[in-house]
Length: 72
Image (cartoon, rainbow, N blue to C red; front, side, top):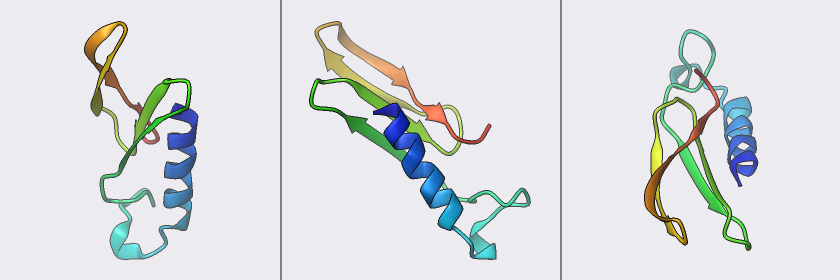
């Protein structure tokens, strides 16, 4: 699921071409976070920038998991 989230972010970054939406490095200048879960219950998340977390509650109990980041 984390790889799927990163792939989706890469597609958004590649297709964001309006200059007003890009920073000085040519990266999207807006926040976007994806979360996903597969049919086996494995979860993952990814964001453009680091520091995002999401809540999970499964057999291991409730907790926060960190998202992967595309930039940074």
